[in-house]
Length: 416
Ligand code: SF4
Image (cartoon, rainbow, N blue to C red):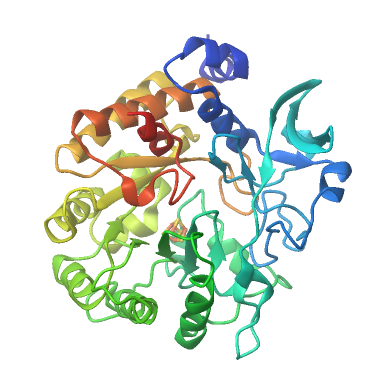
């Protein structure tokens, strides 16, 4: 069987086939993966069921998987009945997504004629209706997931033409006429944090990220400076030295990490290796590979961070499935899984868990015409990564189903 045919064949397993094959993985987690992989399409009836006074709608600032910026009349994302988040975007019907329709007046995921599961739309936080004293909608300063506040430091990445091949930040920034978020001002951040924290019981952490900033005496010095400023603005609202927080950022030197840890309330650090293979990293993430001397340096910097932030407070994210991109990715799912898990284990030996997001080819990225691997592959990746974390006794509490909700393998950690 040639490789192309084999991949098509592997993709043919249905949700129920995969659910039966892996009884140790909860059906709702497998469903979440499949919904993320295929995307959703909201019927008119489902959209009519949205209540903008209650539900969180998409922001015009972010491009959707349809390549559309302005369709803000769609839900931000979905929740399953066990509280599992599905961070997912709408796609056009020709991509064969799950439909979200109203069944007996309730939103439900539909595949073909089958009602798969009832879902809920995310509820909007109270601060989403407010505007900062400088006149910016608060939801454009800090976005929300059901239990966390997310802050994007910058909407540019200095890798430019050397951007990661699955990422669309560079092309998005070249798109004329798109809505642009005003530059982030620390006064605005502080004001929104104060307001968001007034909603008792809603938020349990902050996630801070942004594109890579290469400037500075040492590469990334400027990026570190800006994150310190941002973290200090948040820290003003806490009486404790540290506050629940995750920074997803570039691979810093020990000196930079120490500065970050000593001068802010930051509790955890994530540095994404994106694809767990040196050669594929060089191909898929050329900017990252060049910035600090390649995959091994990037990896060693993540590992060194454990000495500063402590075991259980450092991790590395991967774009699960991108290792199978053509033409230079792994040619079979077996080979990709084996290599990825072996490298994840090598990180775990040093106390660094790897976790993944489901790769969905973005419309504005160089990988736009590629396809994600099979559902079966993702379930095996989920089990494999979680088993490694369990075997090495590593927790990912700072990025789990409550705080982030985007990683199927950390969803699985809750039943460990
Ligand atoms: S580092 Fe890669 S994934 Fe991150 S913003 Fe830059 S190009 Fe995109």
